[in-house]
Image 1 (spheres, rainbow, N blue to C red):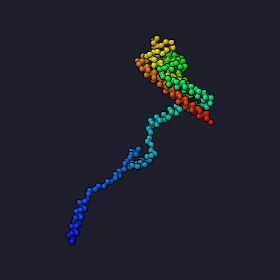
Image 2: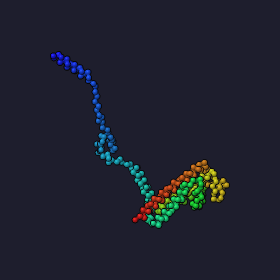
Image 3: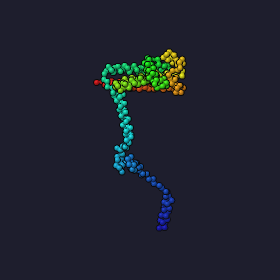
Image 4: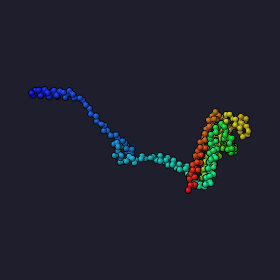
Length: 273
């Protein structure tokens, strides 16, 4: 009987051993990511809110700004303040009659400027407008003004003269009379002057435009921009330079609208009780 029990135990052990399978246990990673302190660069445990070495609180820490960056930021703020002061805040008018006059001028320039902007350069719309007659005396005076600087500057002086005059008016309005709205009108005039000389530049090779003496450039020794671009060796770029001048005029005109509109809005708010 004992023998049979022993045999049974042995057979049970055999069965257990024969069914034993290898197994593995997966252990979740418990590695905690480390971070660096932004101030002392010491290792910190993940999720830390303050440095274990220097004690700074991460959420409140701001890296130091170099003196050079501080100076640049200070200079930039100063220039922004000065620009705002001279271009906008120096206008303190509260007169309703002045406001009405400014609105009328603004609307006139807006409509006139729209015609300049949407009319193609090739039509010479600016050269045939009333303002061309206003620009002409300053153009001719520019030739005389630049005579001491040589032949090239004497020829270029005509176009420079008609652009410098509205710029002088702009500076006078800003510095002398402290009238930013008047300066915005002068900027509009400057833009129109650039657009006025663009057809002249565009005609440098063709020389078909009628000049002041009732003749074209072909019937004389050329006109201003034919001579200027020939002397520079840029005659083949006349159309590109013309469009550059015309597009610059458009950008300046749009800037004058934005400037004048802002001043009118602030003037209107000062009228409100």
